[in-house]
Image (tube, rainbow over the protein chains, first blue to last red):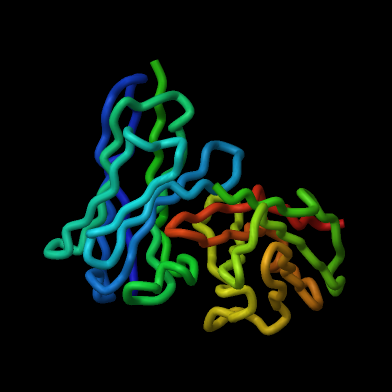
Length: 124
Length: 107
């Protein structure tokens, strides 16, 4: 079945780096835009970043600009989030999510397949 | 950036009640509004996309409406499985924003 599995979370000191991975299976990964979404403890959902079907177009939230970078490797069916200059406020569960519809405009329709999440804790 | 404001933040209701959650956008987003349900410790679940399109497998008691800046999610007859937190999410100019969430709790 369609599945996303995140990995790479952990505890890191402020200013440190982590790279999250999201392995996709059960669907044609290269045909879908992909997102990262995070949720701080006890808080709501925050959209983090998106990457288009062919990886040519990305965007991210103002709160992470210049620090978190989304990328994809379609040959490995894997989505990545490179996290640099981490701050305590980046502490959250990070989810990868698939656009609900395939193709160039599919990302407009929301996110229909989600991973189980990976926890990032930024603390000294 | 477009801001999304949900109301109420918390809603107390009983099984069988009709429940309505409102989401307002800080500027027009046409019909690009989705609704999610999230239960504690779980990933969100997409219920509705493009304002009113029910995802496959979502019960028909869920419905969505609206356009422009004001949108609603309605649960026609609340069921025990529906007690959860609900989020709206907008799309505009290759950027997405979630509302702050509405917790639906047992009265």
